[in-house]
Image (cartoon, rainbow, N blue to C red):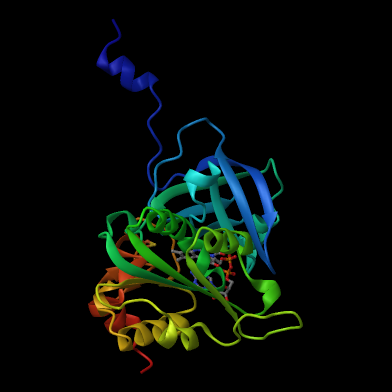
Length: 290
Ligand SMILES: Cc1cc2nc3c(=O)[nH]c(=O)nc-3n(C[C@H](O)[C@H](O)[C@H](O)COP(=O)(O)OP(=O)(O)OC[C@H]3O[C@@H](n4cnc5c(N)ncnc54)[C@H](O)[C@@H]3O)c2cc1C
Ligand code: FES
């Protein structure tokens, strides 16, 4: 019989939260502008750990560095772990240019999610995204659209892009619209053939036909956008504690050890990125410039 001591010396320990596991790039889709969506699968055959919509992984481009990237896929739909990466610097550039077959590192999932699986049936849910801010919301919206089809509450999606050719996940937006949900896309600058609204996302909120009583809202995008969105929703009568925002801070450990992501009393990697606006984001950040 194998003794406990023999077992512990022969069974490899599961890697801790600071050790990346190897993942192979199995798909690569050039989205709009400088955004690429990578599909990833574990090289060593281990099961992808379950995650909540809105959480993030730390993704390593070996030899270059590691960055926080939101889990962008809806695993129920695609069966892959998806991350949409915007090429803004050394690490994101290495990830955006990684070919199919390349190996990257991945650890996670970390942080808080949107909690859509815990929303009560009934109230409307408003989702407001700017640019790549739709990535961490994509899986949540898929879930909310399914919930609406089951008659458990309406969803209103408002997505903003710089121009018509910069609309991220246009296929998903169409699919959600065809499924019967309210989906509005607005662009900062229109062009020939564009028949949708022109202007920032906040201009659509006063007339959006949702019922603010008991409503929940999820928003992700540039900080200034989230600040104006949150204020506009509160002006419409949404309880500020039911407005959820996703904060972005420079992450290193991702697990509450290094302090790099500290924001007041919060460690954004651990206590965020998704936090309520009322009582948290309003005090710490989003109202700083008021
Ligand atoms: C919780 C979380 C989720 C994220 N999800 C995504 C995602 O789904 N897709 C995606 O493309 N990016 C995402 N990011 C941002 C991503 O981590 C940064 O773009 C990345 O760290 C940049 O690293 P780099 O080495 O490529 O560029 P760097 O050379 O480090 O930076 C290039 C530019 O980006 C700015 N920058 C760097 N890090 C951040 C940051 N965390 N927030 C804002 N600006 C930053 C720098 O100031 C600089 O102007 C997320 C960040 C967080 C904290
Ligand atoms: S990234 Fe280290 S504490 Fe948050």
